[in-house]
Length: 301
Length: 322
Image 1 (cartoon, rainbow over the protein chains, first blue to last red):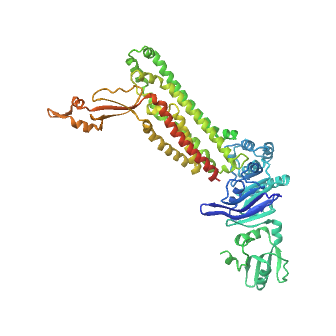
Image 2: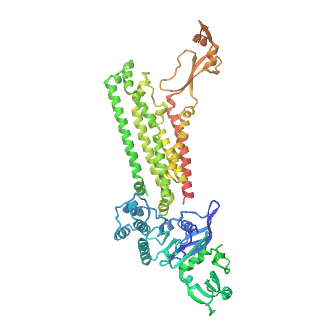
Image 3: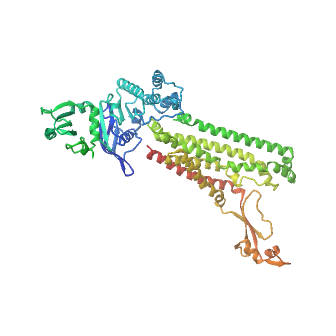
């Protein structure tokens, strides 16, 4: 199966600063992919490259095997940019008309029915909608395209918890119904934890992790045990993050084999813990040289 | 895409149409007033009969002579296309981030830009044509008066009128629109782009106001000092100058120094002396017959600048905005 998005050593430079570099990814179709990383990690740049807003400074990007700007790709990919830009003087109905004017096969009737069901007044100007209504309008415009791939840049930032839940609910219903692929970015894993089954973690302009959440959860554990045994653990597993008290060691490790040291208690890491550990150690990861880290403070230098 | 262009810019286009309608109504009303007044005082009949019409002409000019001042205000009308159509075209999108909405639809960025540029270019040309036609009609009584030397100081070669006649307003509007679009694309903020458009337009337009009369070497008439130069009434006079007997230009003070005399304590220049010494008086001018050639040259400059600026705007929009 063709990857939804494939990048080969892609880089994007602004002047002398690389917003994204040496990014090689293959994001499988049919997943809800969370793109997580701190602000400035290169998430927006990667999304803009994938929708053809940006051209790469190095390397290549393909979407369903074709260049992002090719006509075939444009019709299959929908994008909701950061802050969900819409024309404030257009009414909601105008906005949906626009979807029809600019996209062949745009399902305006369905988008209209959908927004009506959500109680959004069609004749209201977009500039006067609430944040949640505006987000739903932007989402309906993107979904009306019936895309095979939907990309959303920080879609739930600036939304109140209720609007946030509603937004994700609509999105997940659509995914269940159509089987489209989705890439969502956020700097908070909590936003995406429940929706995603695939995670891409970015930091400092690079991709740190890219795997299904099942693999990530199965491949990591949190170990608690005597500090004196930590050295032995590091020879068998990769320590992503470690914190120590006088005698106790708490280790988040990538497990290569079952933990058999009876001195340690093991429990699965949550996605949140995992992401936070990798984020605070930007050099830990598949591509980077792996080494046990002495302490949190020392490692985050 | 055409539907979106209309929905998005209809307010701008309708405002322009309303302003143009108001201007047309004013000019038509003025023209009507002038022609009916000409008929009522018998000026029409007089002009047709090749008689001496000085009395009627004076009455006419007393009443309508100042109307030409309107044009010094209207000269910069083409600039509005740059300020209110060009500058916001891309800058307003980038200011609000809506370019990321518009350019990620199935319609390509190239087509998006092409349709918008074509729509505004068409509208600008149409508006310029309307202005030029109305003005050509408005100016006719003054042309008639000047043609028989009955007074008046306005014809289509006059600076303020030349700018709104023929094809120059179309060129000016295109240039202004292209300048605004390019400034908006490069600066990405509407108000600064408007300021740059204003400055850039004036920077080309103001030098052209005088330079355009020198694109073709002006004609000149020479005669002995004191004679009346033979310049066609319909021509635009650029200036008068003095020359010595060999035809070398001299300043008035040099010339006057040659014929200074003192009579009864009064110092003065003796005119007869100047003529006797061979000093000449010459007048340079552009004849009305060169109207379309001069129009074409100025429009050519505007259009060339517009094409270059649109090229920059298109290239920049396609490559540098994300």
